[in-house]
Image (cartoon, rainbow, N blue to C red; front, side, top):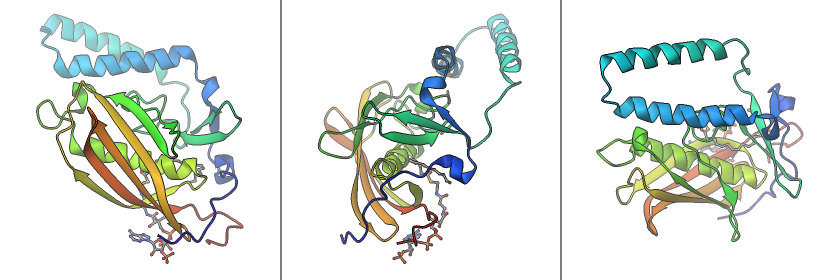
Amino acid sequence: MTVETEPVAELPDPRDFGLPVVGEEEIPAELTSLVEEVRTLVDAVAHTRAGAEDLAAARTAVAEAASRLQGDRHDIGTMVRHTWPDGRVEYGTLANIVAGPTNAAAPPLRLERASGGGLHGGFRLNGVYQGPPGLVHGGWLAALLDQALGAAAGAEGMPGLTANLDVNYRRPTPVEAPLEITARVTGTERRKVFVAAEISHDGEVTAEGTALMVRLDLPGDGGA
Ligand SMILES: CCCCC/C=C\C/C=C\C/C=C\C/C=C\CCCC(=O)SCCNC(=O)CCNC(=O)[C@H](O)C(C)(C)COP(=O)(O)OP(=O)(O)OC[C@H]1O[C@@H](n2cnc3c(N)ncnc32)[C@H](O)[C@@H]1OP(=O)(O)O
């Protein structure tokens, strides 16, 4: 793969695109804890065999909780800033469906820099992520791969959008089991960033993906 561009030196500031930014450290611990509880709630609702009385009481409690939280909301598109101990800054979407720290519908995916380059993360998906019985839905595996692929490009200073995503499902991926994900940049060509990622269980790759991310066309970049 031809490498024709150097990664941009600094990540674009989302505020330059009119997007609000909150620091990760500004997310209240109570909200993080609430997100966890809602994940537990979604799983409980999906699998409950409770009777009518408990279901009705739970519905009332959930409706009350929802109305309590509706008043003061972050704008759509709000970004979250993560600052690494060495001072490097990364941005993600606060309510990102795969990795947003305040999105209870997102699996708790945290990616770290891998020592050999790229990103990696360990995670576990509960029964809410099932497609076939006991197995993770393929669409969610694609979403997890897409997120890791985009994040790997972003971590190299080349944030962009997925133009093409290619996924191969090698083996069934179980729910309620430890999973690993890795992703890395494999090449660049002008604004094109080529990335590859794998999900594995028990040391075996269950799903792998490659993508073409097209780097954001930034002012002063010349598109090159
Ligand atoms: C919005 C600003 C925010 C600021 C944020 C700041 C910081 C953010 C930091 C980090 C972000 C980190 C991580 C994000 C993590 C995960 C995100 C998950 C990923 C997604 O969930 S993302 C949503 C789904 N995604 C879309 O919603 C894209 C819809 N789409 C488009 O918006 C356009 O389609 C676009 C932009 C892709 C390209 O459009 P464009 O006009 O900019 O560029 P253009 O067409 O000129 O293509 C340039 C070169 O790519 C080649 N090319 C293009 N498309 C191709 C294809 N499909 N196959 C083969 N080659 C292709 C051309 O052939 C040319 O190649 P060449 O250089 O050789 O001529």
